Amino acid sequence: MLTFNYFTNLKDKTIAGLKKRNWDEQKLQWVDEIALLDSERKELQTALDQLKMQVNQASRQIGNLMKEGRHQEAETTKNQVAGHKSEITSLEEKFRTNKERIQELLLKIPNIPHESVPPGASPEDNEVFKAWKAPLPELFPGALSHWDLAEKYQLFDLKLGVKITGAGFPLYRGKGAKLQRALIQFFLDQATAAGYEEIIPPLLVNADTAMATGQLPDKDGQMYYCERDQLYLIPTAEVPVTNVYRDEILEESALPIKLCGYTPCFRREAGSYGADVKGLNRVHQFDKVEIVRLEHPDHSYQALDKMLEHVSGLLDRLELPYRILKLCGGDMGFTSALTYDFEIFSAAQKKWLEVSSVSNFETFQSNRMKLRFRNAEGKTQLLHTLNGSALALARIVAGLLENHQTPDGIRIPAALQPYTGFSRID
Image (cartoon, rainbow, N blue to C red):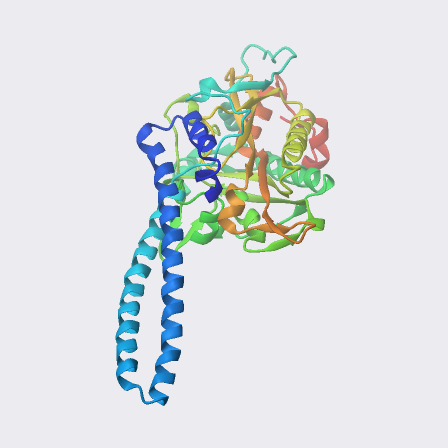
């Protein structure tokens, strides 16, 4: 959530940023409305404070007047107090309505893109930040897609997933299940070696937690909701892990805080039909290891670079061709100030598959969750929050199966073999 500074001192920057997100003029009017409401809120608060002070002073006078036998003056003062209290009630109602409208608007306004974010309206406008320079892999005649490889080697079963749950819930089995588990452990080991503390969080969160990281109200329709308990299944470990320090004031010396966590992730969106959602390309449940950083504002973009290096290292060790995209204003997530997407090349499908998003949210999430630190001068400041997929497994599995297949089976990358216990699937 943006701070009020974006609607007063940084109003021009805010409007320019929202235009980069392709906001229309009607929505841009919310910026002016918040500025006016904030000014009105301050005036109402001043008026309320003055009236309450007058009521307190008058209440003390009434007691003194009664002691002195000046009953008529006491009654007159009582009437004044009653009038002030009535006015206070009216002003408090206006203040409440004002505050609710401000909150309603603030929850609708996304983060302001970093100055380096390219303009654009769709994924086609994203900028290639790092291209894959080596030749893309060419498969042998008769090479299979990952869903056909899964059937051939009995690695995962989408039909059984439909029978047990529904479309988009794959069932892994045999070496497919071991590969899944090996990837999770490999990613966690690499994260802890890089200084991230491992967290095993709850898989369901309350509305306050989902609101704090920006999933609510923006992605309400994409989350699975348990109505009876009023809990949400997490769409990513980012949600519970980032909330570990909600409502806390940290000491500057404790920064940076680096956390990681493995969780299943649950998302309702299904995307389009056809090849885009075939096999593991888009599923409702998938496993992911997430890395989260809480950073001093002066260091957060250096931290973002380190996160890019971390994810790049994982893909290098898995021997997968990849590229990094800098997302344009129209394709960025609601909460992000700057996002990089990692895509691996699927040799069998001859297309790029997104496997990670790494983002800096600056103070957008920390403002929602009241997450601050105390600086050297003893003043509190909002932290910058960052997170990244390191990595999302469904498409990683797809890429591994397709790119490492041979006429005699599927080769397991050397870095992964200590975790799988086998060097190939045949």
